[in-house]
Every structure is written in structure tokens, then in C-alpha cells.
Image 1 (cartoon, rainbow over the protein chains, first blue to last red):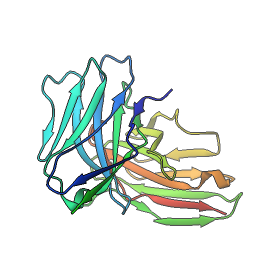
Image 2: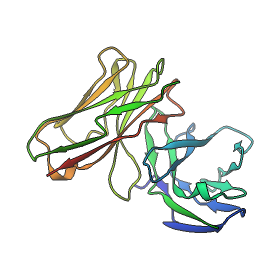
Image 3: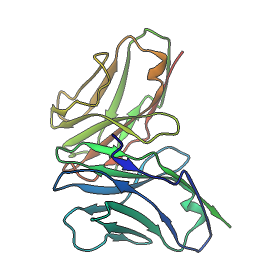
Image 4: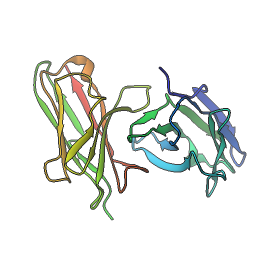
Length: 113
Length: 112
């Protein structure tokens, strides 16, 4: 069963604009964590942001924010003021109880100058 | 400080051969994960170590795959009788507490 769904295979955004990358998840665990990772063409996975299921406020890390809607089981990533270096694959991931991690299929983001 | 390192960066082998992939985690990180990433896909969980023991190996696809972490630091992923379908990038990640993970650059395995 698909546990993490990323419905946007590819996205384009104009430099300096904001972009939202969608992620929905499926779990019945009472406690879980949600993550976003960036994977440039070099291949290394770079941690961006984390949201715990019990966190009351949406997580923010610099230009990254996570729009967490628990009832809808969504954890969208918002990147503000896009930069050319933001062009990469972006993966949403969920940590379930027991520390198993599940990743989505990713969204390819291209920032247009 | 040093990040997670993986060796080799590339491995080409023939069908049926045995391979070992090595992961050096960030010093002091107790949790270590192995993933497999096929082209166009997200990482697929294989196994998770907490210290020296495999806390969860439910992602290993079959008994040809095995991983060890004898001293709670370096880990080796071992694949016996490799098949062409094993070709992928194998990623290792470490974590100080089993939560946020820090990934290595991966080993690209090609089975001819």
C-alpha cells in the first residue's frame, strides 16, 4: 500500500517566486514524523525540514516551511523566494513507529531564471 | 565534521557474484539505515540498526541480502548471487537518535 504520495512528478517555478510541493501520507500510527529531503543531480539526500505528528505549529527552516494538515494527512513543502540552486528532486518521507521510513516517488523542481 | 561516507562509490559486477558495500556513519550516531534507490524512485527502506543489532530488517528483499554492524559503527551490506534486478543506488544514512537522518553519497551498483 502506498504510504507516501507525491502527485507532482515535475514542477516549474520562476526564480524568486514561492512554490508548493504536495505530499499526502497514510498511517494509523498515533505518533509519526514527516520529513522533506532534497536530492540534487549529485545524488546526495539533503535533509530540509521535519514535522512531528504532535507538533502544534508548522515547521519552518529558513526559506522552507511545512504546511501540515493532520486531518487531511498532508504535509506540503513550501519554498519561498526560489533560487536556481533549488532545482532538484524533492522527496517527502514518513517515519512510522519503530523507525521505518517510507519515501514518496519524488517531485522534480526546476527553477526558471 | 565528516559526514556519512560510503565505499565504493561505484561497483560493477557480474550476475551471480558476491558484493559488499560499506557505510561509515557520522561518529556517535547510534542509528544506521540502508536504502535502495532505483532510477526514478524514492529510497526504499532495507534495514535499520540501533547500535550493533538489526532493529528492523523487514525491508530486505530476500535472503541474498544481509547486513552487519559488528561494533556499532561501520556497517556492511552484503549481497550474494547478485542479479541484474539488484542494480540500483544503495544509500546509507545515520542518525543520532533514530529520527532525522543524514545520508551518504550512495554506492551505485551495476550488475551485468
